[in-house]
Each structure stands twice: as structure tokens, then as C-alpha cells.
Image 1: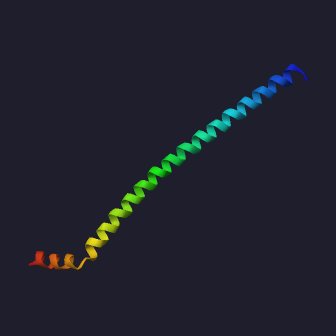
Image 2: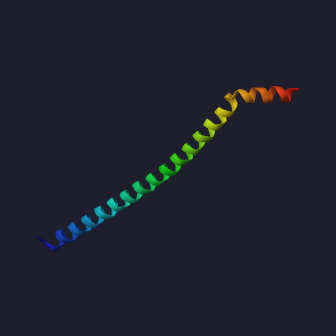
Image 3: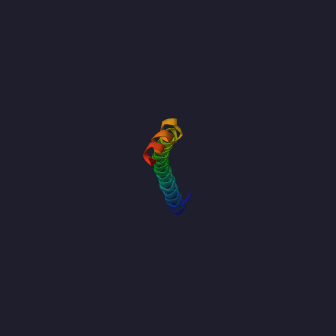
Length: 69
């Protein structure tokens, strides 16, 4: 095996390792971003559920009628 082929093989292996490491880093950052987005969605869904409970409560309509008077 000539030295040129040996050096070329090392360069290829190092380049592939760097690309794979960058791929893993990017995948990890996307996972963190999606978990933060999911937490925000969960919080908003809980707020909507609370508002639905308030609006569909029978006492809400009664208070609204009192406020009209």
C-alpha cells in the first residue's frame, strides 16, 4: 500500500467521523427544541381546558346575566 493511499484513507475516516459527530449534535439539538415546544403546547392545552371549564360552568352564565343588569 502506498503512503498516498494510506493518508487518503485517514483523511476520509476523519472526515466521516466529523460528519457523523455533527449529525449527532444536530439531532440532539432538534430533540431538545421539540421537547421545549411540546412543553409549551401542553401548558397552552391546560389553559384552554381551564377556560372551557369556566365558560361551560352554569354559574358563568348566571354571573353574566347579573352583570348585564
